[in-house]
Image (cartoon, rainbow over all chains, first blue to last red; front, side, top):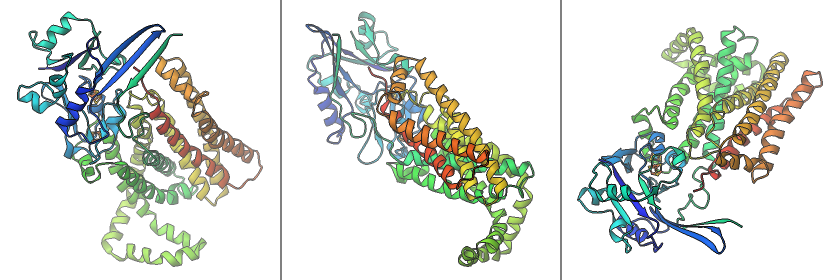
Length: 177
Length: 330
Ligand code: SF4
Ligand code: SF4
């Protein structure tokens, strides 16, 4: 099993509902976020192109954060989800330095925190909170190893990219373009 | 004009807008680790060469600073941890892929080793103080009494003293690992283009050795020893400059993110601090002073020694700071 997520940049309107859903679901402290929206505008006026991306931890297959963690607090769990075990984390910051996407932050309680792909919800057969709440239905989640899953189908159908592939992290969050 | 505007909704403390997770603690840890490695390296090396009486400060006295430096360094690392009371988790696993992990274990081996090495020279240190610094001796006499009061400790010390040769070899080996580790700790992070160069390992090792030599030079009261270490320093300064130039050549010949990184030092925000504090004050100036010394002009030794220590500390502060500011843009 390999969990992955795809976000349709053509459908995303940048409403940040996913951000709020995540903050509510996980009790993310105020002023912090595990997912966020990036808007990239490029081109030459008046011919401009806009891309909206809902970003989060990419649950990389070759995660530098897991590699650099001295205690094993950062680890791969079921389906390749990258998680942090709170009571093993010493808060050294090595994983934060090692993530090219800056997807992690230090929780006010001291341990390092980030997106969990809602592993608890997924374990119960539900969608991650951000995917479930998206009003434009622009996010897809599922198992890459299952050719009939929603995610496999959409990735087979649509052109897509990952972020900073040159960093060699093999992200599991795809952006449909 | 073609433009690209990126707007991100993320504003996590210490992450945005510029990553700033590591503050003064990590550079301090790296500096003290490098310094300890430098002192241990020379102590081991000159002991094996049979020069323990020629270079007394290097072999016998400077190593007393090693456990102090390592202790303070580890304390700085501890202060850096945000989930402090779980720090013992570091010592429940060994993860070879994580420099932070094997570094913590290296320190676990090196610290007791340096303490034992120092213990075997405690008697000589007190004799030295008794002769040359009676005031210090008077104040610290009780320490000597406590240490040598128990037969068990006396036996342990004399037993350890017979193993100095083995210890010296281990010290040289561990010093090189420790010195390189202080650089590898950073270069393992490929997410930060400035750190992602394997030159940091040798660069920090050489810089650590030169700070070690500077301390020995400073401590020594013997002109032969001082001259010798000042020459070692001169050589190390040369190597360091060479490595720094190579580092920038490597960046300039690499990908866009690394070219951008080099620009931070070649006109960007770190230009002044790096070239003035690290290169000029920390390398070129002490280099010139030592060269003059070599040519027979006498200068107070603490000036080049201080400058080298200052440069070593600045190198680490700036590398940690600038590394966090260097990033992939996407
Ligand atoms: S995005 Fe960052 S935190 Fe997430 S798995 Fe990849 S490297 Fe680790
Ligand atoms: S901060 Fe915690 S999760 Fe991150 S590398 Fe250190 S111990 Fe591991």
